[in-house]
Length: 335
Image 1 (spheres, rainbow, N blue to C red):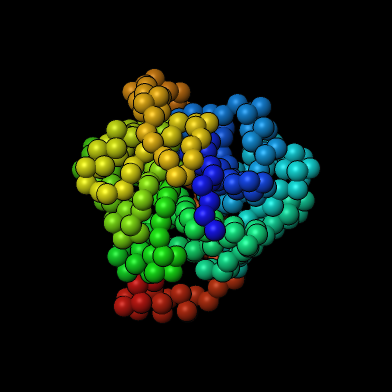
Image 2: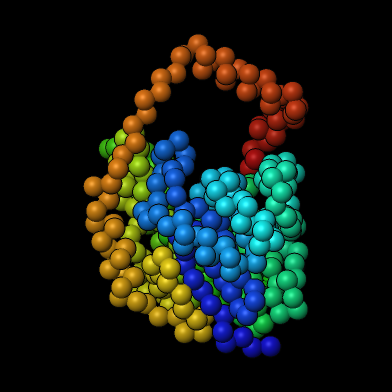
């Protein structure tokens, strides 16, 4: 079955809506507030009423992993009653610890757990496939009729073998959604070399994914944040900006485009909007004027040591010190 009316709508950061007919799946909703101890902030925050209107029209929410820029407790608290009222199903990977599942389940949400590389049929023409990546992350591959959409968010998938496996399994890639800038600590203020390499590495990963998945279109996302604390603000100096990524169109046969919040296009006719380029350019050019958070809480050294010792004790109450020690020293296992 061919589908010529699949709609792609960008909401924010790693959150996007993919819809056709009466099915709409929303990914990784985080729209306001700060995460990682006031270390990250969104470059753009959505209006509450806008999010309510979005929730009224979706049928599923997919959460890729537990990081707060993907699994926002604030979002689920704020819009709990509406999500439950609309009987929206939450899709998450099947994990051993059940932390996310248990939280959502206890709060009255309907949760669907998907195992690695197992299909979940919304209907005969709309299939969800979950692919576990690294220790905690997951990708979502949607098969909608004859179209295939890869949502890799920030999965660290960048090697030929793994990408070839995915292409062999799913046959094609009509749209690739992937992270485009570094999202972790990359050295002290003076270690600019590390950050330059990290930004370049993200560009190379995007090109590698494009090459081995034979991606027809690429929508870079999951990086629309700035480091917003006085302690880490300097990390913004070499983050990839949309203009940096759009230049990669010269090195790939894929069509790389950026959406602005609220922008919607049809999958079969994706084009770069000048308004979107200008929207992000204005925001990135003004990062230096953004609000910074200052950590005012001070921690007692002895209490910190006590907490650390308790944490270690808790770990070894649930795990074998001997097994951890053995695995740690069997270098060839790369654990």
